[in-house]
Image (tube, rainbow, N blue to C red; front, side):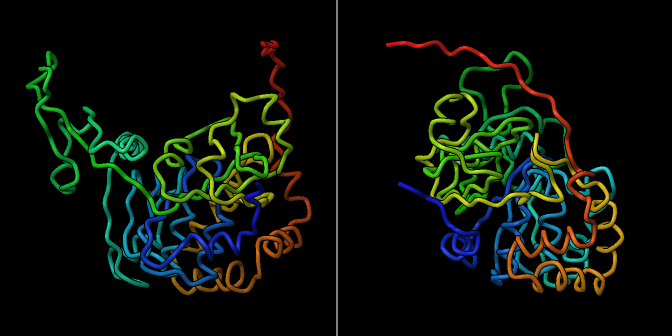
Length: 311
């Protein structure tokens, strides 16, 4: 059964006001196309979850989509602050924003507990830090097995089960069997933890392609509600082997986002003023005709392997 749909319809169906939404992807595979469609459809009161909120949530918060941010590490990677998030937290502009911060491994643990339907996930990384003092979700329990490395207490974090996860990848078949290679992040864990899963891919392939290389299938189709074919849907992030990270844009966003009026003008031009991702790409290519040549990742092919034939 095909699960193919449009980005407009996937967002209209699976993202509701007040939902907890995870648009994951650790540096790579960040689905800006989905974020922009959520903004265009005017979703409000969202709880946004991500390891490293990146520019994608800075833009959504500037658009007034969010009431809360659950995250680990806050910044424009390699550049500086997320100025729209700062305005929301410090000044309530465009609306107040509640924040709930964890370490990277704390967020991984939350997703893993959510995926396994466990009541919590134990980890050591909060011993000796100040985060538990400002986040009541980080707690400590006594190990039932004793502990030779301390006083027997371990930190725990609660499960995280997003209402919807939107996950970008290189390819999928029409049934949603999704293949990813490169920097995987927590795409698999989030898919298993979420109540609904929308996958967005660079290309749709035949089931035979998936079956020929099954170990690349990180997200099985049985978890997936909708599949969206959206080439370049992760720009200005990157998709391994398809296009590189647009560092020019990450640097430009630092300048744009420092000023609220400039940010609003950018949103009007690049989000609200466009019908869809195709219009975004057309404008991008009109502004820089050779952008995909600039962002070409080159070629580094993997070696073929033999799975063998077994009766």
